[in-house]
Length: 587
Image (cartoon, rainbow, N blue to C red; front, side, top):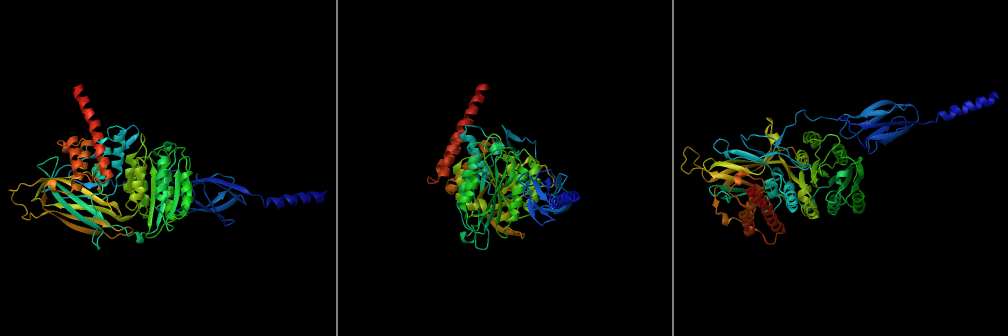
């Protein structure tokens, strides 16, 4: 009997030495957001585990106490002792923090422009940043001004969406520089030793014949297709419940399928989703495996809240893990912008993206939807993320942005690009930059500065200045009346810290408006269209009929986009003209 008892006790001791414990817990950041796919090294056996898509983990361990090393890109590595009987709440700290006060970056620099009252435009659940239209500035007192060179075009397709619905448009949804960016006004390649070509034309101002209109065209260098570097793309897709509409997630699926067709074997694609959970939907995959990528895109489905902050963090970590030195490292965020879990305000989003821009990873934002579309948030993310911004209102726009203009959208040839122009007071009394309007909050920041833009391959930008000519009999001014202004375009090459410059002198050579190239006259009709939609006091003399006439006389009959634009002016005239008639009847 004694031997039997000893045998039982020995067996229990033997088997207990192999008994396993189960270590459970979750990993969060300092903002209490769960962190998915964090590496967990178990010291007792040397095995590597990962937290799940929800940030939680469960690991079998051979003993009740053990030690771990927890690590993730962008966070401080943490080693700690753990007890398997306790639920682990592990917090990882960022390697660096953004400054307490983020500078509000300007889109253009207009001296003495006051912020005024902040409106915060909303339409239903949609939000738009409140803008302050640029004023006329005296050249004698402030001869120099500047603006960011950007390739954003989101405002045009969003305006089109409103007009196609028969609706008026919030004035702050109309950004004239983005309406102009949407069209091609002719391309001239830069010299071999420069990244930019600059040209100007001066004519009469069609909505104010006592003034002049300066057209300033900037063309960026085109990337040689044979020398396009490998791309490391992370599709960050909002699959929350709010995306369950035909013009949201299904449209984005179509857009990404189109983009995948342009990828090469040397390119890498990853997909990160956020909704009911946050995680890697498709691990890094060669662009040559198109069927695999297409299937992953097709299998995405909507549901749950919108933890945009956690999604952004996860996407940047994946992009960092696959970083290609000298390559095109980019997160492409596709969403309606309606973040409702974690950090949600524009200011919080700005701080978040600031943390990652120094990693050399660009951010492209694709906005979709209506009703709860957050234009203000996506615009902030794109600009702070050193990237660009487009709004997809239909499949044709998706094809335009991600197929026909793929290199402009995805491949940058210059960073932090901004243009300064110094006007000659002998020829210019006052000047006004059309478009490039600043946010009220940026103007109220005493630390503000111009935010340079990212410029894509082969992009052509057209900026317009309305000018009040100087009195020809004025005295005491510069005798040089051959130079209207001096331009300096500042920029950096991608992944380079060296500041570069391109110089250009605007000659004083007045061309009759009817003798201008048709594309410039068409651009004038776009500026008038934008001013009428914004109810701009600077275009009080403009009319819908005059805008249509100008567009029709200068359009390119072979350009379908220009034909469509004339149709949009007609729709706007009916909508806004109908409003005026009702107002008169009620008076």
